[in-house]
Image 1 (tube, helix red, strand yellow):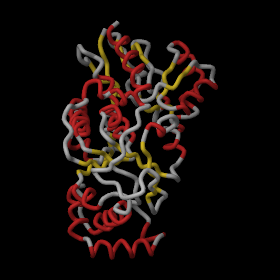
Image 2 (cartoon, rainbow, N blue to C red; image 1 turned 60 degrees about the horizontal axis):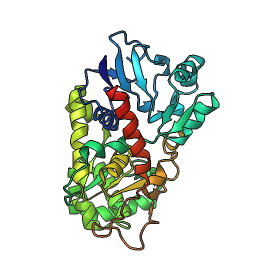
Image 3 (spheres, one colour; image 1 turned 45 degrees about the vertical axis):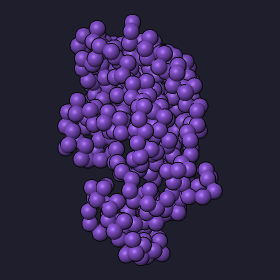
Image 4 (cartoon, rainbow, N blue to C red; image 1 turned 135 degrees about the vertical axis):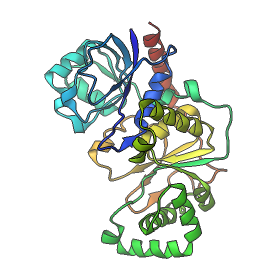
Length: 344
């Protein structure tokens, strides 16, 4: 029997989310004998006709539910599964429900997915996300001084059209703090006046909560963009890039993010992390977080401002909040279940 890894190499219209490969990396760490083949989540699971392959089926389902359920040649472990509203109702058609019942209980990444399956008569439970287990292989004994800012929510369009006063303040802020805004823009590999304008808005808002110098000196990472496919065209290269990010987060002083597959790995890696939640998020996004947000130290972004309920003063390297410990209650049984699956 072969060992398989589920991937999403082409993303959506060429825009790749390296978080999908962080999830794949979490599964890969349990296959001591290595991975024999990659299977595309969106296009290859249903049509696979090769030798029997063992796969941990964690992840987000699904942009193309017409390509579900998977081939009988795939021997699955269903943990950390998220059913997104984008794939409904087709993803939970009668054929799919029969398939899930063959492989129950189904471990779900979020409580919303648990409810969807239980309403269809499928035995399901909240397993949490497999990326919480990344500390099993990647936790570091070293703790550096680097801060990582990984796409925390902030306005990226519409300021000039809908919030002219905020736009005017941002231009003034850009004029007054141009060297610092320019430094962030270069780190984000962006250019042009528009990028400077929105990075000025970001620094103006986030420096009300976080230490100014910490933000300016931080490392900036974008986990979901068009350049990933260009720079890392093969599955092996994407997986290696995801691994390099996880290793950086493992040694980081602290992390600020709105990316779930940055934030959850940081919990497992023991890296202090703050998750920024958007208060007016759409249902497609909000449905992912049931049972997970409570694991984090959370700040909220309301579209124009970030709100701090964690500390009375500005957050810096020296007073960055310590992580909660509840995540381990989720990660420990996940580790045990995955090891039992891959060893048999």
